Length: 251
Ligand SMILES: C[S@@+](CC[C@H](N)C(=O)[O-])C[C@H]1O[C@@H](n2cnc3c(N)ncnc32)[C@H](O)[C@@H]1O
Image (cartoon, rainbow, N blue to C red; front, side, top):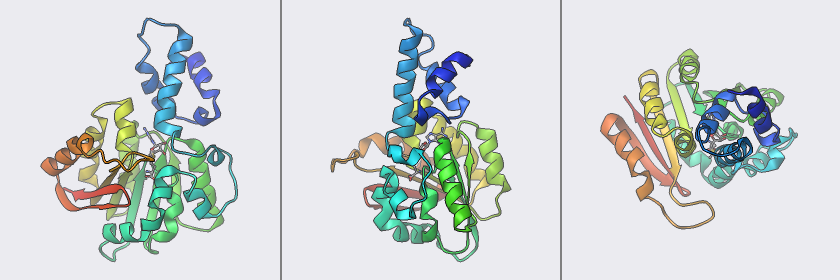
């Protein structure tokens, strides 16, 4: 894409490390509008904010040496999940084998590492570079085996290559990330899921069952993804904990 526009968008700290691919897709929504370039840049930033930074505290964007629980509370998704991690991971890791977790659109979920048993080989993939640095800093400082990779999930072939490089059994997480993918590229999550299921042992998709900050349920909106999974794959478990529904499935 046009480098000048790219730079304008990256001037904002929260977007400064976003992969070009994500910015390009966001900009393509407005590229052909009959409006000024400034307006297109403004609209692109609004969309990027919704997808990449609405749920994180700005404090996370500057690297700090903080306790994992402090960090987990600075992101809406992990904060809401914090009391339930043990239960959730118990349901996902049902056997004793050493498994590889590939956490797609991880946010800062790598900070939940201590809730895994010892046997997990953890890889996070995330577009927000600052969150990737934060997780890698934590893994290194605590001599943990996890790693985080700075990559857009729209780089599908690279994502698949990373999954294939991990030892089996492979468990792929897509926690609260479907909405983000759909708002940039409708139907992309179906395509991505269809291509990662054959190279994974289990895939776990989650989504919020109530809107952030409100008790209100919005079940109907998510039926399409549930139907898609049920129609095409083998559902192994399906449960709701802490306002989040998890569907575990495989080939
Ligand atoms: C609502 S957060 C959920 C974070 C984490 N999965 C969790 O549940 O704790 C969505 C995350 O997906 C990331 N994300 C969205 N679109 C992405 C993309 N195309 N490639 C990589 N990461 C993406 C965002 O930056 C954000 O960290």
